[in-house]
Image (cartoon, rainbow, N blue to C red; front, side):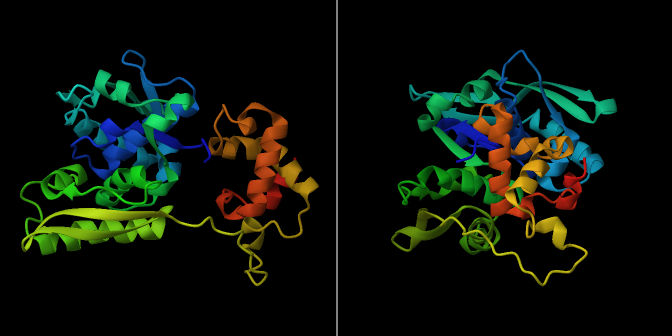
Length: 315
């Protein structure tokens, strides 16, 4: 799994009873990713900067709208609380953020998370066996917060392929469903569960199905089957594309030497350096970067769409 945009959260924090909106959870995700990729980690006394441009690029919106969403999300996130059970079986209650600073002239915000959040998030590679890991890209295109939360809960069980039973009331809390929301089971399934399952199956790297657990005639919980989707084979780019857009998404006609030249272009490097982690081979050497980018260009050129790919040959 690529380290680029890798979100790593402790299972305890990941299972915390919380009720974050989609913009709020995206700020938390970006914080985890950026703390990891900048190799700085999270701290209770060192602010973490999140740029509106970064938000906009990741979640496909404008920079201005990205900054607006970030500020609105921060204001509500600052007042949010969550709880979880610690290793000693004690309930821990905490807020998410202890401090925020607006950098309006720079289109960015600086956040300082609370101790419980900092302790619950790690960038240490050697400890990954104790964490739930997933790529931010897997949830970036999801439109429902329920889809994101369900993905986070179920991806932990990808290796086991089967989850234990999620008791109904706790499961509702974990998805962020309010006490007075979708109280009827038909509404809950239609508006929350089935929407999330459908979006996960269409947009993520896992495929899920569920079974109801009943006590008598009453549904008391759900179990899930979780499968990792097969890795897609390299797509064959159609030769019948419109001539005005073909070069943007194809490497047809470009040999490895030309692709290497594109990968070495400073503009290309600046626009796509977010795809790799600084600690990966591609992030530590020119040769590693070129090797990684040439392979990615050949495997999936659609992710390199900031400008027509041939433009990078001219420098």
